[in-house]
Image (tube, rainbow over all chains, first blue to last red; front, side, top):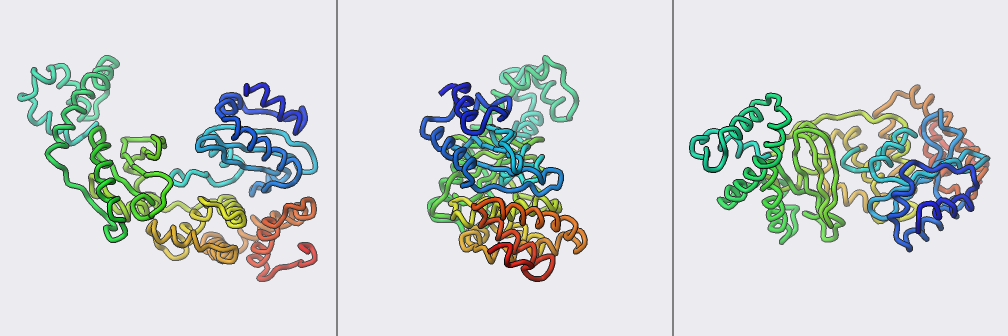
Length: 115
Length: 290
């Protein structure tokens, strides 16, 4: 599936306000059909209050809820929602950018040896 | 580039020049060894023709046999030692300092084979099928995580036992606990954050670098109660009571709101319980979590 089709589907789940990271298409297009369907299922779970989430452990982001997902061995997803409001951003990336995003939000890096 | 081989070649430069290396190439190699700055054309020569010739010479050197260092021999599964030796030899053709460590050596079931390659600077991870290549600097080897890995390993060099401990931030410790709880509740196969939490607990509370086999066993047997005990002791060892109160009190309030606003809240209830026990010595408001 092409990047813009995937974005379209995510807009239909979360609404038009959802933003994507720069490299979203590159990573989304790497996903095989089965992985993509799992990813959409996870997005629906997030939307329907059925997925694990957490409030970032630093105060300035206490208005956010963050969802993390590992897809395949080298693609990672971060979905960010404003509490009592909309989903605002989805980030699909590799390990490096994923860890940078985690660090920014106050989480520990996920890579065992690079922590 | 294999530094030892570079020394040998330069020591016997007359035997190599001009048949294998030109005088210009020898000059570049000398500059490289002395750490002097190279011009662009010299860099090009170093990373193309010189590097290739050095790699070919490494193969000859490897044929003579090379001393390998084995740590934690008693924990290494039969048959894996030979495989690991082959891998170390394979990667040491192009790299001077290499070691194999991780679950491949001591566990029947393993996900990947961790191969560590010492580089001058930087950090990089790369996968080649099941091989997980971790490029690290010698300085980084002093980090507890690598010191732990080295306790069961096969290497081309004696891994120095230095230790550089870095205290984690409160938010990192909290998020590690949060994700460890989720891993435990979901019975995840590869609970990375549980591993981090137990490792840090032993490092900062017991002043011990866990060897990887023991760590794996502790991770397998981890329960929600264990995790809560570990995190409470870890918080107390790392931070003052007042710092913890300021850093966690607001989060408990946030958790109260989050617990009310979602049905998917088992993990949040667990965090709240642990934090209240830490801050107030008991769980405060049982009605809020009912």
